[in-house]
Amino acid sequence: MSNKEVTMTRAADNQYFRAAKSSIILLAIALGTALVGTAMAAPTGLSVSADVGESRQDANCDGTTSCTLSDTGFQVSLAYNFNPYYAVEAAYVYLGQATAGVEGAQVSIKNSGPAIFAVGILPFDKWSLFAKLGVTDLQTQINATVYGVGSGSDSQTNVNLAAGLGGGYRFMSNLGVHVQWERFKSSYSNSGGSLDSNVDLFAVGLTFSF
Image (cartoon, rainbow, N blue to C red; front, side, top):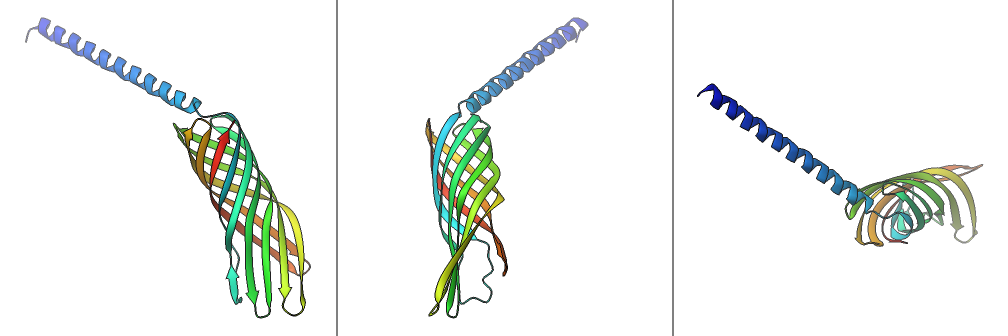
């Protein structure tokens, strides 16, 4: 092959690689623009949600004759999305009731109260993943019954941390469905001792955006 042919071949190869490089850059820009456009399509502003599911208290049933640690729980919340990636959420949660019995007596524990969360969101078109971290002001109410004697109750309210993970799907511009797991801490103490346990809520819910 002559020097002229080699030079022409190299020039053609360089032109090919420059064209390929330009195509890759344009494709990357297009994909990046599409991803940004997808993320920006996520709603911002106010939204309301309602969740219902199963609550489960992490308590010790040793020594009891009956024990039920799971119940129906629910949550209603108001959130504000500052952008597609960050939101704050104020909620009221009801974590159901756990009961334990021994011969001639029964004790039940209920947990409910307000919570506030900071929420991080990862949007994928109509899908999203989220994680939340916040604080709760849960009221723990204990009811005790001694058969043939009587019953009594007491309650305490304590501030504790809470966290959660979940995912959602938006099938309309202002309406979506989600599933989530949240963990709360229940605390109660008196002169007779203390009772601390984790309470999990596994729930499915609807979100309406304004």
